[in-house]
Structures are given as structure tokens and as C-alpha cells.
Length: 197
Figure (tube, rainbow, N blue to C red):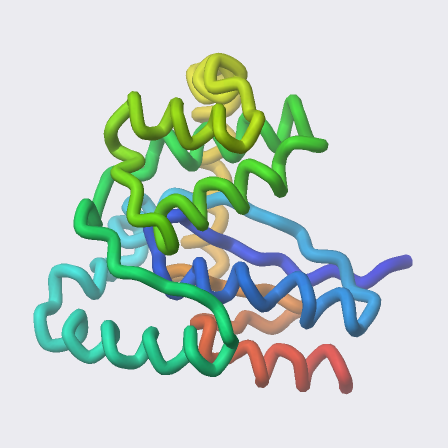
């Protein structure tokens, strides 16, 4: 049976974006499957008593420089989005819905949203901008919008987020490999070590 590493993510986290750029390669090199778990970071923050670094000025200022260093180390683009933070609930519901009903589109959707948010600096809180972004990626916006409105999709996102909190998650990106939890894109070297042992 193929081993799996679970990746819990929200598009609103720039560090989760950085993790997204690396985890497929880390897992693939070791023959490990990535289990993608969309969560709502706002719900996780509320449930765990945490808050976004965006609301802690000193931490936010430090993180800007730190993330730029990691993006350079990884060789990937990362740009501050002037519309950050935005409410990602619709984006995350669409991720869950596409994963449930159109799994072949899921990774394309994830790539499209992450790159629009953290590379192209698109205002994904604006419906017109989101629609154009999806159309440019050959994803039917109506498909994404319709699945995100389904009650079972809303319930699944809440379930993912509540389950994450019950497992000790307090932010994103978070990874689970076997029985161990790893938090932060700067812990992926430790995650890789665990995969190798």
C-alpha cells in the first residue's frame, strides 16, 4: 500500500503556498502520495485560539522577509497580495466541491488559485476577477460556483476544519505523516527526514 502524507491548506496562507510548491516533489521522490485536505483557516484559528500573523504587526513584518528568503531558496515566485487578507471561504468550498465532484480538475484549480493569489496578486475576493482567473485556466466558473454552494460541500469543509482542530492543528500549512504532525513550510526538511526513516 502506498504511504501518504496529508497536506492541510488554505489559499489565504502564503506559507501554505510555499509548501504547495514543494510538497509534491518531496513526496514523489519518495514514492509517497499527497492527500490534499482543504481547511478553513479562520475556523481553525477560532477553534484553536490562534490568530493570523497578519494581525500581529511585528510577526507580520518579520514574516515578509522570512518568506522572501524561503521563496528564493525554493526558486519560486512569491508576491505580497495587496488585497490580503481576504475571506477564503468561497475559494475553499470550491476546492472541496471540485475535489468531491470533479477530482480530475482539483490540482489545476489549486494551482490556479495559489498562483493568482501569491504570484499574480489577483483580488480573488472580487467575483469578476475570480471568474476571469478560472476562465483563463479553462475551468468553468459556474462549475466551481455551483459545487461550492452545495450543503454537503459546506459540511465537508467544516468537518475538515473541525477534525483538524481536534487533531491539534492550529494553522497552515500542516502535514501529517504516519502518526506525526509537522507545522510550517520551514519544517518540510524534517518531514522529508521522517519519510526517509
